[in-house]
Length: 407
Image (cartoon, rainbow, N blue to C red; front, side, top):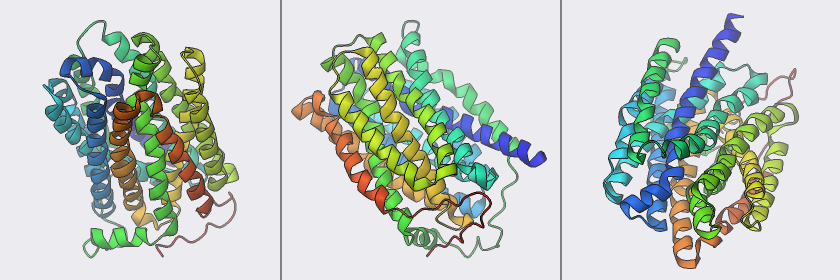
């Protein structure tokens, strides 16, 4: 009973923290049309701001994920949440493109440090037969808060206050959560084998990169993040500038991103606990690709747009969750879980999250914003091949688990 309560408490805290990370990352997307007018930003500038945060996120995930495998989870998690709480208001102080990029880089460091460590902490606290379910619960909070609830709240807050003040509302929850994490998680202890002093980041990274599933996961994350970041950053302008939806209607349609991701992130990883990881990967990539094609063919019909956007992120975010969670955790030794997740996240963020929105912004400026959906559609085509090449890591409940190896 105590074990179950501790599992629920840890998963709950990690989930709430990821919800705050989601708010910080994605509420700015709903604000972009307003911020762009205020700071005189173009589509390319929006892509640069989005990409800068993603690059910082990826680098922090790579470094801090490995650090937490060697020094423990608590200090990294509480420190990341504290940095988040102290700096989130700074986004509202930006006076131009350069300062906005700088602020988002620093926020990306905090968010990126939290991500792989929270995933490893969730999986460590979970019973093996609940890994898919628990990582789904934890990961679903980012789209629920960041992509589902935040656009609705932000669009209403804009009637009451300027966009600069909206960022400051989330500092207090970040401070409270940092304190709760520090109080709840056990004191940091280096890896149980006592090898922390002898290990190096280079050796750990080399060990996880030797695993075929990790290399495939890196490329798959590039595809998933290309879809997630380009659609969340540029679709608000696609809806308002190309389809001419009013701001409130656009915000409502964009909320489908979060609600679809929330449901998919919860249900499909749970399904993978029962039928395996690889079948669910294939279902997800085919579903996301087909939904993107249908979304692009839909005109200014809010209900239809909501439905297809819901489906895109239902499938895409489930694939993200399976990649950074079970695929990584079940392909390497337990002492390298956060390192493996950090490496995969870093690749996805640096290229899919960092480069893709910049490319998307340039496509919008040179060929028209009506063509931006071709980028995530192409990414899903590549992802289908990669998913077919992955090795199954799932073990049916009741059977002895396969031995994990870094080789």
